[in-house]
Length: 370
Image (cartoon, one colour):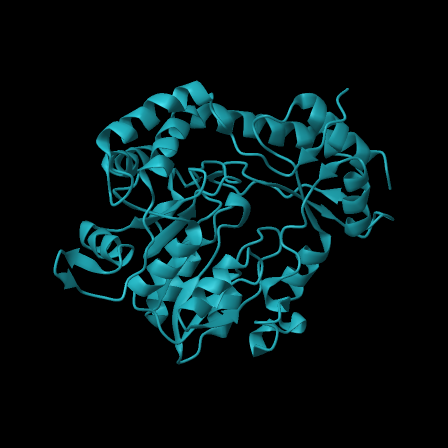
């Protein structure tokens, strides 16, 4: 059996020969950016694949979050999760907004609607939940809360490419949803992202914002940013989209095999799949509970000794970082479930090139140690 290093994720890369015609087309056009043919084709193709009408491509998911907040003119306080990648909260700070952290639900990794409602103040203008690991948030409950209090909802959907909830794309919920196409994601463009918009007018405004606020050669309507996706990134996305079904099928097979092999592993919990949802298996988190003598960090280091590089996503919590820890909402006592998850979660390797033998090796190390 191979003892090659195994990382938590590796990008899916189609054969280089398939990418060459795209590059030749870009070279022939002489257009490298600013909404070229590849950019337009990818927006249309993604809309068709995802089942949404208006997609605005951006340079990366973080720029997407920053731009989405600007597009909705969010101010004051925004309720969000401490259990996410730092970009979620950083996008708020870049817009001069105050993050208010609410705890997550047991079992789902996502914001708890009851905690959201309890965190609302007169300064609250929006909610920014995360579909963590591609598990859909309680979108109906969040929508009711937002409607009741007159709040905007921007979903950080970085993990949620292709995810469906009750038969529909989860990206259709909220005022805006923001995707990441970073190389570690289930679908990627090397680096990139997208904002899913509810209508053509919103997409048009976001297209201005991501291009410095430029309307035409002599008109700059707002203080935008350089958030455009290049033609090369868009071209790779078009190629990657041709392979996405096979990549997702392989991820689902790996997910199933892990669950089978770890079903009786002592002290290991594989979180259940959300009812009524079709995920993308973009991550495979396990929880290492108190029934196991070897805690999460010990297991993390054991795997590392065998050149298996799992990740403690998400540890530390965003709320524990220096720029956030002094916020009243960042107190660990205020966030018991998120704090528990941060101490016990471990994301195992999952990507299309991972072999069954690799999965068996990883699961065997976990199951056979205590």
